[in-house]
Length: 377
Image (cartoon, rainbow, N blue to C red; front, side, top):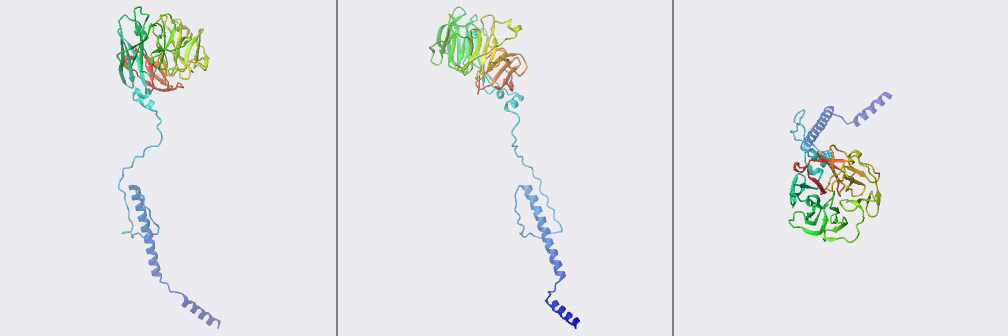
């Protein structure tokens, strides 16, 4: 009885089960796997092509792809020249260093230098910018004339030339002024001394200090061709910064620097062995902040001296160690903070902290000329 009941229940269940064709299921599974493999192969090929051609392709995962023609497909991308991507890393070589390595002097000194070349009958001012050297002004004088050669000077901005035209005694004459390149000249004063290490001294671009025959100092405004009213003081050995802000001078034999609001005394003892050959020393160039002065020798005879040999810190009275090799001939502080240290083998260019910027080779014909001024670009 129980066995019959069991057979009936099993028969009912068998009627509810849907017959499954295993062969058809196997075929469907095989087709699905084939399609997946084809899609994967096509996607890989598209990725390779996209990378080779630089084209971004988006592949939708549910899109239909054609079945592969064979059991496997190999796609070889054509050779493509890789594009050159500019580096975003800044250059580690400064323009000054790069140009110095290639011998381009204008990169270490982008401004203009002015030199004074002397012959027996001519005083020529050379304008040197980069590798270009040209004569921009010439003062003609007699072969036995001393005043012109001893007094020709140029304003700190490089626009004006002044000199004392000898009268009769080779010690005094007429003070003349001209714009650079002009043939004519204007008389500023008469009876002006042309003797001394630096008979004409600039205070900025428009003011000029000279000495009369009686050794009295006089200040002229060259822009208006008039004497400046007021006593210039009893200081000696005067020298102003290129912008005319700071004065370096001596009072009662004590050197100092001042900008009218701050006065700072300093001391300096020159090399004893060298000092015995000269008639003392004085400031020849002053930094725009009054911190440093370049000092030069005064000759035992009253003749021109443009050079300097050392830098003194007016706050500490210590001598600054100047980087570079070769004997120092002159030192110039410019308005932009650049320091030009002229040596026998060229110019060492330093920044305001006396760090090396580059070197400049001077024109061969100017090795014996005086470096009068440097005007930044």
